[in-house]
Every structure is written in structure tokens, then in C-alpha cells.
Length: 389
Image 1 (cartoon, rainbow, N blue to C red):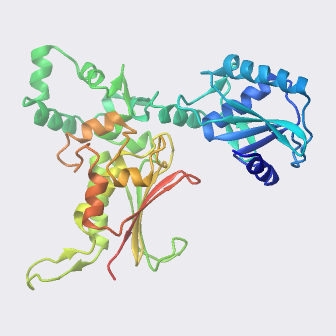
Image 2: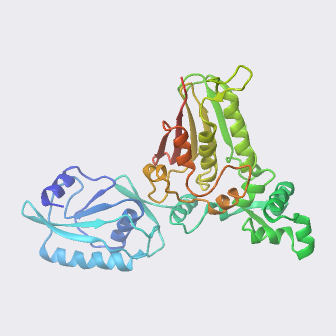
Image 3: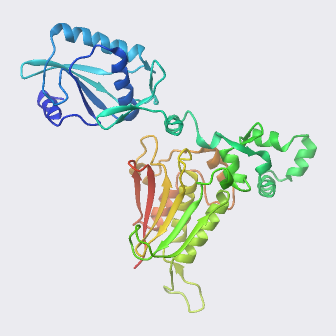
């Protein structure tokens, strides 16, 4: 970056990507800033600049001392250590230091006291929420929400009929026969499958085979509404339903709601033949199963299905993870946020999920006008599906 570019950036004052310091004397404080940028986004820290953008400058002795302090803070006070780049810049005859910190590839980072920091506007904030920490570790694939035990949910909460039907289809023998032949318990089987830890069901076990998952996770429902008009703030609606149950129940209930509230077009079919759904069913199926399986389960919020006169919106908690972009997923790139849930979903004949990253592409091929949005501010993923007029 040229000196004039640095000056223009300083003139724009502090924001989430630019920070000013008059001087640096405390490695712990600097480490916190390093951690915040490493966990959030690329940034530059300018040393020798006031908060109002006035360039104060540094002495040669300051620059030598601060560069040593930067090295110490990045190596000894950040976990895992980082390698910021420094540049000594002359602006208006005054020397300052520009410290460039990249968004790290080994997130999440903490300082040497075990504190996690993220950027919050021009400042930084300490991460104290367990849910936010879990999402940070999930983003780094160090922990997955579907593997976490659900407090209070035991193996007695398994719908044994659903689990037995799944077992027989996959392994060609009844579950009861296997229990008797191999002298193995239901609890041990669920542990072997990753659906329980000890006597406690994991989130995958609860959502895949639980009798009543919403008893323990009441927010994990599909809230479906058909509005009059096109305004989500409107108070008039034609139909609404809270859909409960395990994942296959959520899928079937939501598909039924969509079919009930969308139009059927006769096209070239005969009078006595049912028309075609106005939105191709394959597009609805692929987007819906993607919404259910790939949400962020660390966020306590429902899925939402909103039908308007001109569109259908499928809204899932959790923006795209791990630097995946809309362009990536349109081209078939995928990241499995909930690998245990996804693994079992590929074996469930009632869920149209293949697990090979082609679902979004199939949906777009069936209806190219589908618009996808990863809303990082609200932490949502939205599929906007235009309706035929």
C-alpha cells in the first residue's frame, strides 16, 4: 500500500478494519487487538495516530521498541501465535507504524489469559457467551453442534419404531434380532452410532430419532406463514402452522404446507389431470432439506417459511460458514456444518439428500431465478424463490 493510500485510510478514521494508537507500551493490550482482528477480519493498526486521525508520529527509539513489543505480543501473548506484518511509514514528515493483521486460518484465537476477542465496530469486545464461543469453534470445525449432548434427553426419548425401521433398512435385520444375537443394549448401539454419549442423547440423536425433540429444544420448529401481500410486517395471513417433530417430520410437514398454499398450473395437462406446482417440487425439496440439515444448531431460533404473493422465503439460522460464498455453493462447493446429521440423512429414504453438494445446483437448474442470500448481520441464510405471476 502506498503512503497516499495509508493517508486516505487514516482520514476515514477508525472502523472495524482500521484502528489508531498514539503509542504502545502494553503487550497484553496489543495482543487483545491482534486476537480481535484475527478472529474477525483483516485490519490495520496505525501506531502514532490519535483517535481523531491526527498524525502524532513516533521517534526512532519508539519504532525500535514497538517493533520488538509487536513480535513479543504476537508470539507470546496470542494463542495460537500469529505473524503480523509491520511497515514504517513517513507521512507529512512524521514516522508511524502500520501493523497489518490478517483474519487467521486457525480461528478461534485467544490471548495468553484464555480470553477470546472479536471486533465490535471500531473497538473490540470480549466473547463471554457460551453459544458464541461454540459457534467460533464450530467455524473452525473443532466442535459440531450435532455431536453435543442434550441435557435431560436420554435414550428413553428415542422413538424406537423409527430407529428400528431405519436400522432394518440399512442393515437388513431387525434391531431386536441384533440386540439378542450380539448381546448389545440400545444405549451401547446409540453410543456406537454417535447418537448418544452415555445415557444422554446427542443433538443428532434427538433431532433424527427423538419422539419429541421440541420438549428439549422448543425453538427447533418450522414456523410457516402464508401472508396476504408481500410485506413480512403485514398482519393479514391466509394460513399459519408451527411444525414439530424430528427432522423427517419437519420435512414432511413443511412440504405439505408448501403444497397446500401454492398454486397448481394446468399447463398442457388434461382436464382430469392434476396440474404442476407453480414452483418446481425438486427446487422446494432441495432447498428445504438444505435448510433443515445445514442450519447453525448453536443458534436458538426456529426455521421460517414465509409465503408471499410474489415469492417464498426459506430462512435458516446461521449465515454461510468458513468463508464459503454464494458463488461457491452455486458452483457446488459445500461445507458440512452438521456432519453427523448429514451422514444419517443420506441414508434416510424420506429425505431427498445425497450429501454430495449438488442440492443447490439441482434447485437452481430447476428454477434459475432463485436468489440466495447469506445475511451476516442477522446471521441468517435465506433462499428467495419467486412465484409465477
